[in-house]
Amino acid sequence: MDLLGIPIPDEGPVFLVAVAAHIVAGLTSVAAGIVAMVSRKGGRVHVGFGRVYVVGITVVFASMAVLAAIRWPLDNHLAILGLIALVATLFGFINRRRHGADRWHILAMGVSYVVLLTAFYVDNGPFLPIWNLLPAWSFWVIVGAPIIVRAILRRQRRTPEV
Image 1 (cartoon, rainbow, N blue to C red):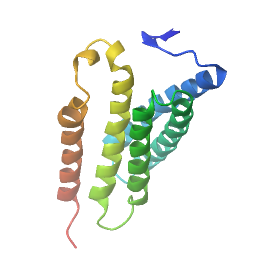
Image 2 (spheres, rainbow, N blue to C red; image 1 turned 90 degrees about the vertical axis):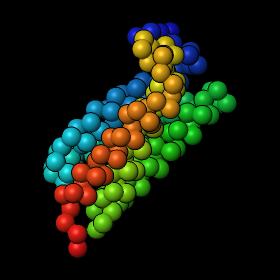
Image 3 (cartoon, rainbow, N blue to C red; image 1 turned 135 degrees about the horizontal axis):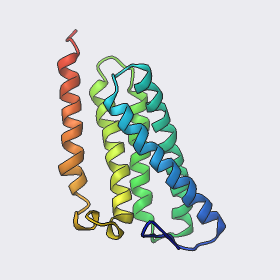
């Protein structure tokens, strides 16, 4: 079976339900992450979409665990990326309100977001136009790292020293 040019393995109904949940949660996480990134930090929009992002990443991880278990060891690399994304998300969520922890929150959530996109690329990039020309590390070096560093630096300039 194909979905927009991406092959979906036929591993049975449990696999297909997990894939559907995984896709919906992944798209939700990507969208919620973007809104949280561009909204005013600490505002209702940022907090609300940040919570949606955390729930989305949790569902992405849970569905990935099902998918990886069914297709082990073919998807074990995706299980590792999923675990990294979940741990980074939870670390960022825990550090969201601690005094002086803004940079850790931004770094962890940024890493989580970039790992989410990297896992998508690693699994689906070879089937997508333009994406199939980029190496997986490009998301870290070209996209992820500059965004994370910029966010941390902007936050430091806005936060008065105590």
